[in-house]
Image (cartoon, each protein chain N blue to C red):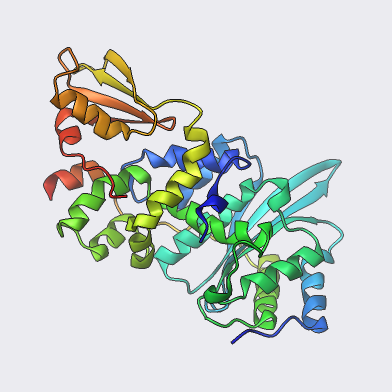
Length: 80
Length: 279
């Protein structure tokens, strides 16, 4: 099953969130697709709009940290 | 999947990054480590991480990379967005994948409305409809970045050390997942035979520019002799074979292996235990 193409409304929404501000210019945008087999273009556009909106109104977080102690695989393998 | 798409000739920065991490045996590689190395490549962009309330079934992560004109200068800002509820291990992959796009060359960048539409139309395709040959450079560079991220987060040297014990059932997929802080499905992918081909495709073109070398070292790691590895030979196997056959002289305590410009040092016993990757 193939997802529906983007509607005019969805295209306008993307334009608004990525290209409407005069104080900045988009250099690049890339996405990591969701895990669903079928993803509607509209749902993805809505997700993009949400993340841009939350970026504009929220606070940054920290990069993900593993919380694990560094292990030298060489030493670990020697003990196996 | 076409390994040719992972050749790096036009992506020297990502190549350097993968090469840098390839020799690493200390894991897990942290997202911060990648940020630090991107900085060392000379990238001055501001980098921010954001969490968004979006469904990871629709979108796991994104990068939006901007230029802000300010007082006659241009401030470049990279925003790395991830779905808030993404599991930690998956979030690490997603953030590194998006970070690597900071290094996208000009022709990989998507910055017009038309190109964003085209990218979304390709990205939403289910995996069985992905057409690597015809989907275009924007969609392919987006997908390939996951593979590049895995090459950074599961370094080649760590894979080479772990693959033997894994095949001998001395370490499980779950244990490796905990060790590397990566989802088991990605671990399995990196341990598969296709990874050898993919990794060679990622580092191959540059690897051919200089020969691999083996340097024998004394106990204080000062060099004894340097050997040029015949083209096409695995340098680790070459070193082990030469040592076993007593073709190397001196009080050898260790070996420095230079493979594709990446150095790693092994003791005599570590080299003796080395198992070449299965092709």
